[in-house]
Image 1: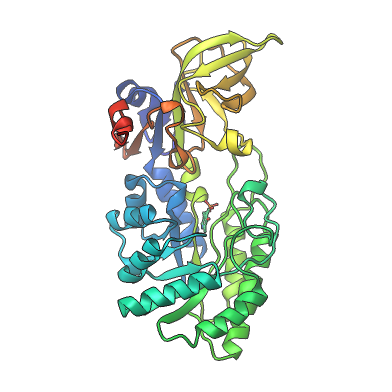
Image 2 (image 1 turned 120 degrees about the horizontal axis):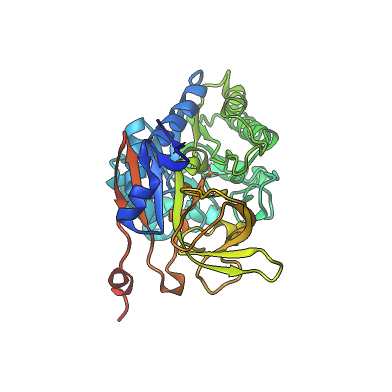
Amino acid sequence: MSGFTRDAHALVCDGVPVQAIAAETGTPVHVYSASVIDARYRQLDAALQAVPHRLHYAIKANATLAIVRRLRALGARADANSAGELEVALRAGFSPGDIVCTGVGKTREELARAIALGVAAINVESPGEVDRIEHLAAEARSIARVAVRINPDIDAGSHRHISTGHRATKFGMSVADATQMLRDMARRPWLKVTGLHLHIGSQITALEPFKRGAETLIALAESLADDGIRLEHIDLGGGLGIAYQANQPIVSVEEYAAVVMDAVRGTDLTVLLEPGRWITGPAGVLVTTVVDLKRRPDGGWFVVVDAGMTDLLRPALYDAWHTIEAVSPRPGEAIRADVVGPVCETSDTLGRDRALPPIEVGDLLAVRDTGAYGAAMASNYNRRPIAAEAIVDGGKWQIARRRQTIDDMLQWDA
Ligand SMILES: Cc1ncc(COP(=O)(O)O)c(C=O)c1O
Protein backbone atom coordinates (compact mmCIF):
# COMPACT_ATOMS: atom_id res chain seq x y z
CA MET A 1 0.00 0.00 0.00
CA SER A 2 1.46 3.37 -0.86
CA GLY A 3 0.90 6.78 0.67
CA PHE A 4 -1.20 7.42 3.76
CA THR A 5 -3.94 4.85 4.17
CA ARG A 6 -5.96 3.32 7.00
CA ASP A 7 -5.58 -0.24 8.17
CA ALA A 8 -8.24 -1.35 10.67
CA HIS A 9 -8.78 2.39 11.22
CA ALA A 10 -5.18 3.15 12.18
CA LEU A 11 -3.13 5.50 9.99
CA VAL A 12 -0.45 3.75 7.94
CA CYS A 13 2.33 5.27 5.81
CA ASP A 14 3.59 3.14 2.92
CA GLY A 15 2.65 0.01 4.84
CA VAL A 16 4.08 1.09 8.21
CA PRO A 17 1.74 2.01 11.09
CA VAL A 18 2.38 5.64 11.99
CA GLN A 19 1.94 4.69 15.65
CA ALA A 20 4.90 2.30 15.42
CA ILE A 21 7.15 5.08 14.13
CA ALA A 22 6.01 7.53 16.81
CA ALA A 23 6.56 4.90 19.50
CA GLU A 24 10.25 4.81 18.59
CA THR A 25 10.93 8.42 17.64
CA GLY A 26 8.68 10.11 20.15
CA THR A 27 6.62 13.10 19.10
CA PRO A 28 6.35 15.53 17.48
CA VAL A 29 7.64 13.75 14.39
CA HIS A 30 7.24 14.49 10.71
CA VAL A 31 6.59 11.29 8.76
CA TYR A 32 7.17 11.27 5.00
CA SER A 33 6.06 8.82 2.35
CA ALA A 34 8.75 8.24 -0.27
CA SER A 35 6.19 6.70 -2.62
CA VAL A 36 4.09 9.87 -2.61
CA ILE A 37 7.13 11.98 -3.47
CA ASP A 38 8.09 9.59 -6.27
CA ALA A 39 4.59 9.41 -7.72
CA ARG A 40 4.04 13.16 -7.69
CA TYR A 41 7.42 13.99 -9.19
CA ARG A 42 6.85 11.47 -11.96
CA GLN A 43 3.32 12.72 -12.63
CA LEU A 44 4.52 16.30 -13.11
CA ASP A 45 7.48 15.20 -15.22
CA ALA A 46 5.27 13.02 -17.43
CA ALA A 47 2.71 15.78 -17.89
CA LEU A 48 5.44 17.98 -19.42
CA GLN A 49 7.06 15.36 -21.61
CA ALA A 50 6.05 17.01 -24.88
CA VAL A 51 8.43 19.94 -24.30
CA PRO A 52 12.07 20.22 -23.22
CA HIS A 53 11.84 20.91 -19.50
CA ARG A 54 13.73 20.74 -16.23
CA LEU A 55 12.17 20.46 -12.80
CA HIS A 56 14.25 22.36 -10.27
CA TYR A 57 12.86 21.19 -6.93
CA ALA A 58 12.43 24.24 -4.65
CA ILE A 59 14.52 23.15 -1.69
CA LYS A 60 12.86 25.71 0.56
CA ALA A 61 9.70 23.58 0.63
CA ASN A 62 11.48 20.76 2.42
CA ALA A 63 15.23 21.03 2.83
CA THR A 64 15.81 17.80 4.73
CA LEU A 65 18.66 15.98 3.00
CA ALA A 66 16.85 12.66 2.65
CA ILE A 67 14.02 14.39 0.78
CA VAL A 68 16.34 16.42 -1.44
CA ARG A 69 18.40 13.31 -2.22
CA ARG A 70 15.24 11.46 -3.13
CA LEU A 71 14.33 14.16 -5.63
CA ARG A 72 17.79 14.08 -7.15
CA ALA A 73 17.51 10.32 -7.58
CA LEU A 74 14.23 10.89 -9.41
CA GLY A 75 15.98 13.15 -11.92
CA ALA A 76 15.06 16.55 -10.47
CA ARG A 77 17.36 19.54 -10.50
CA ALA A 78 17.44 22.05 -7.66
CA ASP A 79 16.43 25.61 -6.83
CA ALA A 80 18.40 27.05 -3.91
CA ASN A 81 17.45 30.22 -2.10
CA SER A 82 20.41 30.73 0.22
CA ALA A 83 23.97 29.58 0.88
CA GLY A 84 22.50 26.95 3.19
CA GLU A 85 20.17 25.58 0.54
CA LEU A 86 23.00 25.63 -2.00
CA GLU A 87 25.03 23.49 0.39
CA VAL A 88 22.07 21.15 0.87
CA ALA A 89 21.85 20.75 -2.91
CA LEU A 90 25.57 19.96 -3.18
CA ARG A 91 25.48 17.50 -0.28
CA ALA A 92 22.45 15.83 -1.83
CA GLY A 93 24.65 15.20 -4.87
CA PHE A 94 23.49 17.86 -7.33
CA SER A 95 26.18 19.19 -9.59
CA PRO A 96 26.36 22.99 -9.90
CA GLY A 97 25.03 22.82 -13.44
CA ASP A 98 21.79 21.39 -12.02
CA ILE A 99 21.20 24.25 -9.60
CA VAL A 100 19.51 27.63 -10.05
CA CYS A 101 19.94 30.25 -7.34
CA THR A 102 17.05 32.53 -6.51
CA GLY A 103 16.20 35.00 -3.80
CA VAL A 104 15.96 38.66 -2.97
CA GLY A 105 19.01 39.90 -1.11
CA LYS A 106 21.70 37.41 -2.02
CA THR A 107 24.83 38.42 -0.16
CA ARG A 108 28.21 38.97 -1.81
CA GLU A 109 29.38 35.70 -0.27
CA GLU A 110 26.39 33.83 -1.67
CA LEU A 111 26.90 35.31 -5.13
CA ALA A 112 30.64 34.60 -5.07
CA ARG A 113 29.98 30.98 -4.13
CA ALA A 114 27.39 30.55 -6.89
CA ILE A 115 29.77 32.07 -9.45
CA ALA A 116 32.73 29.97 -8.32
CA LEU A 117 30.62 26.83 -8.54
CA GLY A 118 29.28 27.77 -11.99
CA VAL A 119 25.58 27.21 -11.24
CA ALA A 120 23.09 26.87 -14.11
CA ALA A 121 21.65 30.32 -13.48
CA ILE A 122 21.60 33.03 -10.87
CA ASN A 123 18.16 34.61 -11.01
CA VAL A 124 18.93 38.29 -10.56
CA GLU A 125 16.55 40.69 -8.92
CA SER A 126 17.96 44.20 -9.50
CA PRO A 127 20.50 46.32 -11.42
CA GLY A 128 22.61 46.53 -8.26
CA GLU A 129 22.79 42.78 -8.08
CA VAL A 130 23.84 42.61 -11.74
CA ASP A 131 26.72 44.99 -10.98
CA ARG A 132 27.80 42.92 -7.99
CA ILE A 133 27.69 39.70 -10.00
CA GLU A 134 29.66 41.23 -12.84
CA HIS A 135 32.30 42.52 -10.45
CA LEU A 136 32.62 39.18 -8.66
CA ALA A 137 32.67 37.23 -11.94
CA ALA A 138 35.44 39.45 -13.31
CA GLU A 139 37.41 38.98 -10.10
CA ALA A 140 36.97 35.21 -10.32
CA ARG A 141 37.64 35.30 -14.10
CA SER A 142 34.60 33.12 -14.51
CA ILE A 143 31.58 33.95 -16.67
CA ALA A 144 28.40 34.05 -14.56
CA ARG A 145 25.25 32.53 -16.02
CA VAL A 146 22.37 34.83 -15.14
CA ALA A 147 18.62 35.03 -15.67
CA VAL A 148 16.44 37.99 -14.75
CA ARG A 149 13.50 37.65 -12.41
CA ILE A 150 10.52 39.47 -13.84
CA ASN A 151 7.74 40.89 -11.73
CA PRO A 152 4.81 40.58 -14.15
CA ASP A 153 2.38 42.44 -11.86
CA ILE A 154 -0.02 39.52 -11.55
CA ASP A 155 -2.22 38.77 -8.59
CA ALA A 156 -1.74 35.06 -7.93
CA GLY A 157 -4.93 34.96 -5.88
CA SER A 158 -3.29 33.12 -2.99
CA HIS A 159 -2.70 34.41 0.55
CA ARG A 160 -1.13 37.87 0.41
CA HIS A 161 1.95 36.66 2.29
CA ILE A 162 2.75 34.18 -0.47
CA SER A 163 1.71 36.25 -3.50
CA THR A 164 4.97 37.41 -4.99
CA GLY A 165 4.16 38.54 -8.54
CA HIS A 166 2.36 41.85 -8.16
CA ARG A 167 4.30 45.02 -8.48
CA ALA A 168 4.02 46.16 -4.86
CA THR A 169 6.12 43.19 -3.72
CA LYS A 170 9.89 43.18 -3.32
CA PHE A 171 10.38 40.50 -5.97
CA GLY A 172 11.81 40.85 -9.48
CA MET A 173 11.75 43.73 -11.93
CA SER A 174 9.09 45.21 -14.19
CA VAL A 175 9.18 44.16 -17.83
CA ALA A 176 10.12 47.71 -18.87
CA ASP A 177 13.02 48.01 -16.43
CA ALA A 178 14.20 44.46 -17.09
CA THR A 179 14.16 44.94 -20.88
CA GLN A 180 16.53 47.87 -20.67
CA MET A 181 18.74 46.08 -18.18
CA LEU A 182 18.87 42.90 -20.26
CA ARG A 183 20.07 44.82 -23.32
CA ASP A 184 22.83 46.26 -21.22
CA MET A 185 23.67 42.89 -19.63
CA ALA A 186 24.07 41.26 -23.03
CA ARG A 187 27.03 43.56 -23.68
CA ARG A 188 28.86 42.73 -20.46
CA PRO A 189 31.69 40.23 -21.02
CA TRP A 190 31.51 38.48 -17.64
CA LEU A 191 27.79 37.76 -17.89
CA LYS A 192 26.02 35.13 -19.94
CA VAL A 193 22.30 35.91 -20.05
CA THR A 194 20.63 32.52 -20.13
CA GLY A 195 16.97 33.16 -19.42
CA LEU A 196 14.03 34.86 -17.76
CA HIS A 197 12.51 33.89 -14.47
CA LEU A 198 9.37 34.52 -12.47
CA HIS A 199 7.67 33.13 -9.43
CA ILE A 200 4.30 34.76 -8.88
CA GLY A 201 3.33 33.05 -5.65
CA SER A 202 2.62 29.80 -3.90
CA GLN A 203 -0.51 27.69 -3.34
CA ILE A 204 -2.04 29.02 -6.57
CA THR A 205 -5.35 27.34 -7.37
CA ALA A 206 -6.28 28.99 -10.69
CA LEU A 207 -4.80 28.63 -14.18
CA GLU A 208 -5.06 32.22 -15.33
CA PRO A 209 -2.14 33.65 -13.27
CA PHE A 210 0.16 30.92 -14.62
CA LYS A 211 -1.00 31.61 -18.17
CA ARG A 212 -0.48 35.35 -17.90
CA GLY A 213 2.94 34.86 -16.31
CA ALA A 214 4.10 32.49 -19.04
CA GLU A 215 2.81 34.78 -21.78
CA THR A 216 4.66 37.72 -20.27
CA LEU A 217 7.98 35.86 -20.29
CA ILE A 218 7.51 34.52 -23.80
CA ALA A 219 6.65 37.97 -25.17
CA LEU A 220 9.77 39.40 -23.52
CA ALA A 221 11.95 36.54 -24.78
CA GLU A 222 10.67 37.19 -28.30
CA SER A 223 11.35 40.89 -28.13
CA LEU A 224 14.88 40.19 -26.88
CA ALA A 225 15.40 37.72 -29.73
CA ASP A 226 14.48 40.55 -32.15
CA ASP A 227 17.37 42.48 -30.59
CA GLY A 228 19.68 39.52 -31.16
CA ILE A 229 19.61 38.36 -27.52
CA ARG A 230 18.93 34.64 -27.66
CA LEU A 231 17.91 32.95 -24.44
CA GLU A 232 18.19 29.29 -23.48
CA HIS A 233 15.30 29.02 -21.05
CA ILE A 234 12.32 30.53 -19.32
CA ASP A 235 11.84 29.63 -15.66
CA LEU A 236 8.22 29.81 -14.55
CA GLY A 237 8.96 29.24 -10.87
CA GLY A 238 6.76 27.12 -8.61
CA GLY A 239 3.38 27.82 -7.13
CA LEU A 240 1.07 24.96 -8.04
CA GLY A 241 -1.40 24.54 -5.18
CA ILE A 242 -2.62 21.41 -3.43
CA ALA A 243 -5.96 20.53 -1.83
CA TYR A 244 -5.51 20.98 1.91
CA GLN A 245 -9.23 20.33 2.36
CA ALA A 246 -11.33 17.64 0.74
CA ASN A 247 -13.17 19.04 -2.29
CA GLN A 248 -11.02 22.19 -2.36
CA PRO A 249 -10.92 23.25 -6.02
CA ILE A 250 -7.40 23.16 -7.41
CA VAL A 251 -5.76 23.10 -10.81
CA SER A 252 -4.81 19.63 -12.02
CA VAL A 253 -1.19 19.05 -12.85
CA GLU A 254 -2.19 18.19 -16.41
CA GLU A 255 -4.06 21.50 -16.86
CA TYR A 256 -1.07 23.33 -15.44
CA ALA A 257 1.32 21.47 -17.73
CA ALA A 258 -0.88 22.30 -20.73
CA VAL A 259 -0.54 26.02 -19.97
CA VAL A 260 3.22 25.70 -19.61
CA MET A 261 3.54 23.69 -22.82
CA ASP A 262 1.31 26.05 -24.82
CA ALA A 263 3.54 28.94 -23.83
CA VAL A 264 6.80 27.42 -25.08
CA ARG A 265 5.52 25.44 -28.04
CA GLY A 266 7.03 26.79 -31.26
CA THR A 267 10.00 28.34 -29.44
CA ASP A 268 13.37 26.70 -28.88
CA LEU A 269 13.34 27.58 -25.20
CA THR A 270 13.67 24.98 -22.46
CA VAL A 271 11.12 25.49 -19.73
CA LEU A 272 12.27 25.34 -16.12
CA LEU A 273 9.87 24.96 -13.21
CA GLU A 274 10.61 25.22 -9.49
CA PRO A 275 7.94 23.09 -7.85
CA GLY A 276 8.01 22.63 -4.11
CA ARG A 277 4.70 22.30 -2.31
CA TRP A 278 2.99 20.28 -5.02
CA ILE A 279 5.57 17.51 -4.79
CA THR A 280 6.29 17.26 -1.08
CA GLY A 281 3.23 18.80 0.63
CA PRO A 282 0.95 15.74 0.56
CA ALA A 283 3.93 13.45 1.26
CA GLY A 284 4.16 14.37 4.95
CA VAL A 285 2.17 14.29 8.17
CA LEU A 286 3.07 15.78 11.51
CA VAL A 287 2.39 13.31 14.31
CA THR A 288 1.76 14.79 17.72
CA THR A 289 0.66 13.56 21.15
CA VAL A 290 -2.26 14.98 23.11
CA VAL A 291 -0.85 16.35 26.37
CA ASP A 292 -3.95 17.94 27.89
CA LEU A 293 -7.68 18.41 27.39
CA LYS A 294 -9.41 21.55 28.57
CA ARG A 295 -12.99 22.67 28.33
CA ARG A 296 -13.68 25.73 26.16
CA PRO A 297 -16.09 28.22 27.72
CA ASP A 298 -18.60 27.41 24.96
CA GLY A 299 -18.64 23.72 25.84
CA GLY A 300 -16.14 22.56 23.19
CA TRP A 301 -12.61 21.43 23.96
CA PHE A 302 -9.06 22.59 23.72
CA VAL A 303 -6.98 19.61 22.68
CA VAL A 304 -3.46 20.59 23.71
CA VAL A 305 -0.76 18.77 21.76
CA ASP A 306 3.03 18.61 21.88
CA ALA A 307 3.47 20.13 18.39
CA GLY A 308 2.97 23.81 17.81
CA MET A 309 3.79 26.74 15.56
CA THR A 310 7.47 25.89 16.01
CA ASP A 311 6.87 22.62 14.15
CA LEU A 312 4.20 23.83 11.72
CA LEU A 313 4.04 27.59 11.25
CA ARG A 314 1.51 27.75 8.41
CA PRO A 315 -1.68 27.99 10.49
CA ALA A 316 -0.24 30.80 12.63
CA LEU A 317 1.39 32.62 9.72
CA TYR A 318 -1.24 32.28 6.99
CA ASP A 319 -4.32 31.05 8.81
CA ALA A 320 -3.72 27.90 6.80
CA TRP A 321 -5.96 24.86 7.12
CA HIS A 322 -4.46 21.41 7.70
CA THR A 323 -6.70 18.42 8.19
CA ILE A 324 -6.23 16.89 11.64
CA GLU A 325 -7.08 13.26 12.37
CA ALA A 326 -6.69 10.81 15.20
CA VAL A 327 -4.00 8.26 14.30
CA SER A 328 -6.16 5.48 15.86
CA PRO A 329 -9.66 6.95 16.22
CA ARG A 330 -11.67 5.84 19.24
CA PRO A 331 -15.29 4.91 18.64
CA GLY A 332 -17.91 7.26 19.99
CA GLU A 333 -19.46 10.64 19.53
CA ALA A 334 -17.41 13.35 17.86
CA ILE A 335 -16.24 16.33 19.88
CA ARG A 336 -15.58 19.88 18.70
CA ALA A 337 -12.13 21.09 19.55
CA ASP A 338 -9.43 23.68 18.93
CA VAL A 339 -6.20 21.78 18.49
CA VAL A 340 -3.59 23.99 20.11
CA GLY A 341 0.15 23.82 20.69
CA PRO A 342 2.20 24.55 23.81
CA VAL A 343 3.73 27.84 22.62
CA CYS A 344 2.86 31.08 24.44
CA GLU A 345 0.96 32.65 21.54
CA THR A 346 -2.76 32.52 20.88
CA SER A 347 -1.90 32.04 17.21
CA ASP A 348 -0.33 28.72 18.21
CA THR A 349 -3.45 26.91 17.06
CA LEU A 350 -3.10 24.08 14.55
CA GLY A 351 -6.82 23.83 13.85
CA ARG A 352 -9.92 25.68 15.06
CA ASP A 353 -13.20 24.11 15.98
CA ARG A 354 -12.54 20.74 14.37
CA ALA A 355 -14.69 17.64 14.66
CA LEU A 356 -12.59 14.88 16.24
CA PRO A 357 -13.42 11.46 17.60
CA PRO A 358 -13.32 11.09 21.40
CA ILE A 359 -9.81 12.02 22.53
CA GLU A 360 -7.81 11.08 25.61
CA VAL A 361 -4.50 12.42 26.87
CA GLY A 362 -1.73 10.37 25.27
CA ASP A 363 -3.58 9.85 21.95
CA LEU A 364 -1.74 10.55 18.72
CA LEU A 365 -3.04 13.04 16.17
CA ALA A 366 -1.81 13.40 12.60
CA VAL A 367 -1.76 16.81 10.93
CA ARG A 368 -1.94 16.15 7.19
CA ASP A 369 -0.13 17.67 4.21
CA THR A 370 2.80 19.00 6.17
CA GLY A 371 5.55 17.76 3.85
CA ALA A 372 6.13 21.26 2.45
CA TYR A 373 6.78 24.35 4.57
CA GLY A 374 6.45 22.22 7.69
CA ALA A 375 9.81 21.08 9.04
CA ALA A 376 11.47 23.61 6.72
CA MET A 377 9.93 26.51 8.68
CA ALA A 378 10.61 25.10 12.14
CA SER A 379 12.07 27.32 14.85
CA ASN A 380 13.40 27.12 18.38
CA TYR A 381 10.93 29.69 19.71
CA ASN A 382 10.15 29.05 23.37
CA ARG A 383 13.42 27.06 23.29
CA ARG A 384 11.64 24.12 21.80
CA PRO A 385 13.91 21.56 20.10
CA ILE A 386 13.28 20.89 16.39
CA ALA A 387 11.13 17.79 15.81
CA ALA A 388 12.37 14.49 14.44
CA GLU A 389 11.69 13.48 10.83
CA ALA A 390 11.24 9.96 9.50
CA ILE A 391 10.89 8.71 5.95
CA VAL A 392 9.10 5.52 4.96
CA ASP A 393 10.26 3.72 1.85
CA GLY A 394 9.06 0.34 0.63
CA GLY A 395 7.56 -0.76 3.95
CA LYS A 396 10.60 0.29 6.00
CA TRP A 397 11.22 3.53 7.80
CA GLN A 398 14.28 5.39 8.92
CA ILE A 399 15.18 8.62 10.61
CA ALA A 400 15.60 11.45 8.13
CA ARG A 401 16.63 13.90 10.84
CA ARG A 402 16.98 13.06 14.49
CA ARG A 403 15.21 15.17 17.05
CA GLN A 404 17.28 18.11 18.19
CA THR A 405 18.32 17.78 21.82
CA ILE A 406 18.34 20.60 24.31
CA ASP A 407 22.14 20.40 24.25
CA ASP A 408 22.10 20.75 20.42
CA MET A 409 19.92 23.78 20.81
CA LEU A 410 22.08 25.47 23.42
CA GLN A 411 25.46 24.74 21.90
CA TRP A 412 25.82 28.15 20.20
CA ASP A 413 25.18 30.13 23.36
CA ALA A 414 28.27 31.69 24.93
C1 LIG B 1 11.56 31.56 -6.27
C2 LIG B 1 10.69 30.43 -5.81
N1 LIG B 1 10.62 29.32 -6.57
C3 LIG B 1 9.86 28.28 -6.21
C4 LIG B 1 9.13 28.29 -5.04
C5 LIG B 1 8.30 27.09 -4.68
O1 LIG B 1 6.97 27.38 -4.66
P1 LIG B 1 5.90 26.23 -4.41
O2 LIG B 1 6.31 25.50 -3.21
O3 LIG B 1 4.62 26.97 -4.25
O4 LIG B 1 5.89 25.36 -5.64
C6 LIG B 1 9.16 29.43 -4.23
C7 LIG B 1 8.36 29.48 -3.00
O5 LIG B 1 7.99 30.45 -2.47
C8 LIG B 1 9.98 30.53 -4.60
O6 LIG B 1 10.07 31.62 -3.86
